[in-house]
Image (cartoon, rainbow, N blue to C red; front, side, top):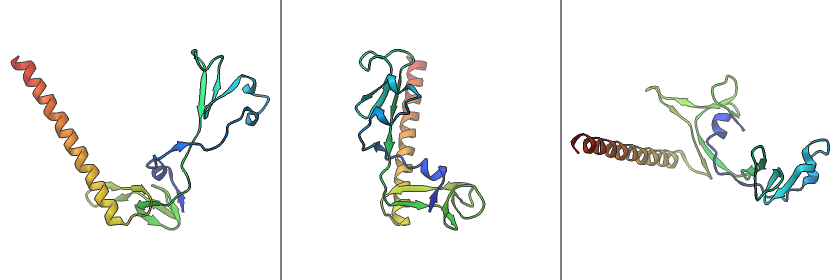
Length: 144
């Protein structure tokens, strides 16, 4: 399958690129002479210890090859959203809501919906708590 931007935007388990960086990989007709390797980053500037305005840091991250699970509307062999042809797209429910779930590893749909329901439950209670604190502080300001 080919993944669309909608699906890849839900993939967030990046890790630092596992390779040894070298300034030899930078083309010579560019800023290679100013580049320094600082850990897993290229640094373009005078000093990595005392950065200045205009200095640039470039780091690389990767997502290792692995199995992912996707709950979406599938048409054909591509995994893309909102396009015609062979697609895996965001499922539009009859209520007007959309569903596109992506998780690392192999999970069945019931398990993925259970995880999504739990995340929604946590988010709902966090918003309720924030709302309660806001109302409480408002009353404190009004009556205090």
